[in-house]
Length: 429
Image 1 (cartoon, rainbow, N blue to C red):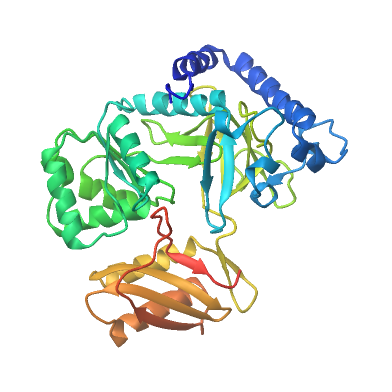
Image 2 (spheres, rainbow, N blue to C red; image 1 turned 90 degrees about the vertical axis):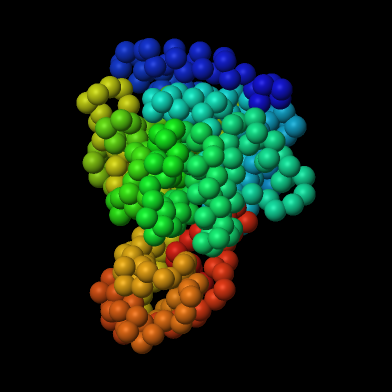
């Protein structure tokens, strides 16, 4: 990043200035910055100017919400005037839609993101770029992008553990690597980390005992439930620190030493609104809206990220606390009676399956019709009638009685290009 002109040192200084302000001054700065962002993009970004479309904006709530669907178009169509792609940080994410979303950050905005990550990790005794990271992520399997990621891993002091193959043989190799390298923390997709932790438990070992330097585990990208946390702590023997982020925006919240989700107020203005886009009071769960306080390259203002959550006042200081984070609002199943069931419900269905049939490797539930689901699973042997009955009872209890549930044994569960794993996929939404 230094070689490309991203000044992390300057960003860290800016971050420290924000953090040293008293609460009143801090809130005044945020209020000023969010309006500066709106006015800048309204005046300099053709896409956003057209999006506002002469709406009368007096109060912040007058600004219309911006969804991913509206900016999911070629980058040149949403870039602010005067910004060239070559001078920006550019990336893409498919998220839960499977359709690529191309985004960009100017150098200051991207530097502020990394300054914040470095600061938050330092609070847990991790020195980013120096503390050795065990990284459970995907990686391009070949070509130029593969080598780019390998170079980034080397510079950032991290060892990549690809998550495309989580067979016993591969996971045993991963365990051996932990016994020979001084890893200080594990970072990766929640489902993959839980799978590895379960493997450690199955082998009758605790990762911390064979890798004494290990300090914490940071699951990311996927919801980490209480049961997941317990498995991670049991298999790894270290504290679990949850983080919540959005690739096109920032790291949005990370747990502190007390387990509270401290929001990234220095970089992002976060709002919670109801289904009619009305602001909700603290403690009530609704749609999460984000406004970047620094990014001038593309307009991320009152951006509807697609997650649900709540905010509350933090008695410890100037930051809000994030609560009730419950995943994507567009990951849901529709029942024959019209009931909409969040994808998170399938977490409990799958946990029932795991508890009753521990020899299953991985599985995914797919809704192919309103009343028909397929459970694809990778296992040593076919499910017997007893197991199928147990799963069907879980469907009756958590979803709706009378649903058709079919089972399909496969060699491997298909993953996205990034290596992320989803336990529920709707083919009808």
